[in-house]
Image (tube, rainbow, N blue to C red; front, top):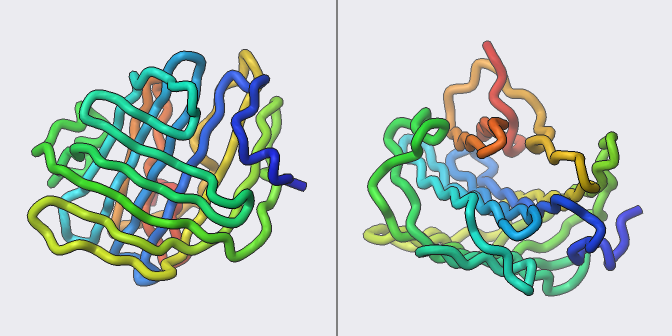
Length: 221
């Protein structure tokens, strides 16, 4: 069973990732905020996805790692995932420029869009116990259900305040020589709603789509 000390970074891990996702139950809005440690480099990716609105997409895969593994500071990027109370509460924040993408497919290409200032300032609270992930090949981790409260800001728009919207988080790590695959999400087929895809430097893809039950992986129809 995951223990409070598991929330910390694991010194023996070659790759370690903290992922946070939240969504409105109607499927009209969803967010991601994720960072991955890999030696001297951090990957950070995030999104604010809304029904019939451009995708606000953030990726930076060349952020220098810092002594504090929960703070990400790159060029025009600041983000943090701070554990306030192990297995109970996390603070999630960022201030950066997102690419405003009218064509969601562009997120799997160069991701170029209108630079748009955004900021997340939310709190994640657990609603259930952390559950060990069913993984193999030396990968370890857990998933936990929760809710999110706080503000999502986009320049030129009214502040989006979310209150107790459903949320989920994952913490995964792997030993030397073992990669972390994309998150194992349920498959949603014939989906045409809110979507937030990400392409990664290792060639892997997380093509996430929003359903009434939360984020899923886009499948072929």
